[in-house]
Image (cartoon, rainbow, N blue to C red; front, top):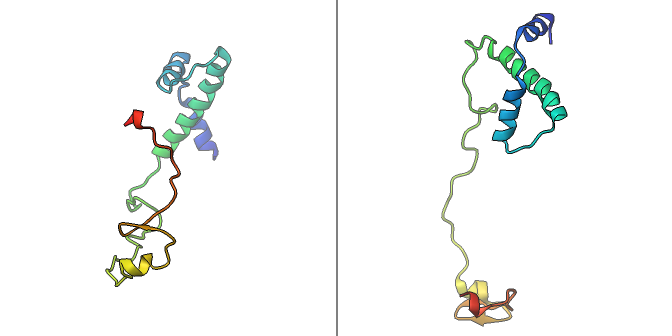
Length: 113
């Protein structure tokens, strides 16, 4: 960070303890007084850094929603011939009404139905 930006950070206000407590409440966090003071400095520094970034001149920057510039890199879906149901089931050890039959892996409790 250059000296100009460091100077800007010194001129920007610090979050109050009440603001930090409010942010903690919104995040459903309970903070000790020590943590409030600790986060007061950390959150203030983060917000101040964002404010410095907010002042950057971005007029010549192209708006993007991602950095790569790629769009729809996936292939098109194509319908292709597949094997028949009979071919798929040909080597199955056990069948039931045209489907693979397997041992149950979940217990059934009729009371819950």
